[in-house]
Length: 131
View 1 (cartoon, rainbow, N blue to C red):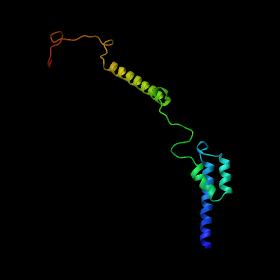
View 2: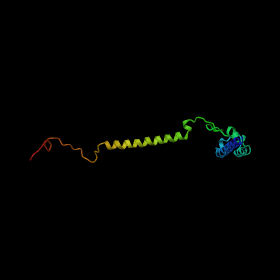
View 3: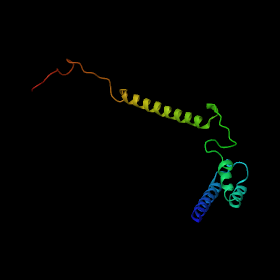
View 4: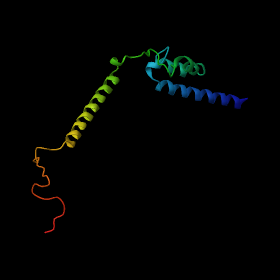
């Protein structure tokens, strides 16, 4: 019987320490019911019931924070979406400029070289010439 009481006492102590640390580090906006300092006092002063109350009542749910409503945001109200549009626009402008530069490189440059073509019969004869 004493071993059982020591084991239960140890389990309550571990549960109390766990809930104290959890309560102290838990996000303030998700604590329900009472202020955090009151929860800490309840956990310490009421040995078994305090930690259980914290776990089942005071600790907010992990998936949906209390007090915040999840709503859909229109694209024109979403700043992240609007920033991504500017990034896409800048990338498209950069690609357009690079394509223009490549097109300019592909065009023959007629300003530096005269457009003189020599036909066979004007000047030299085509073919091999041994002299």
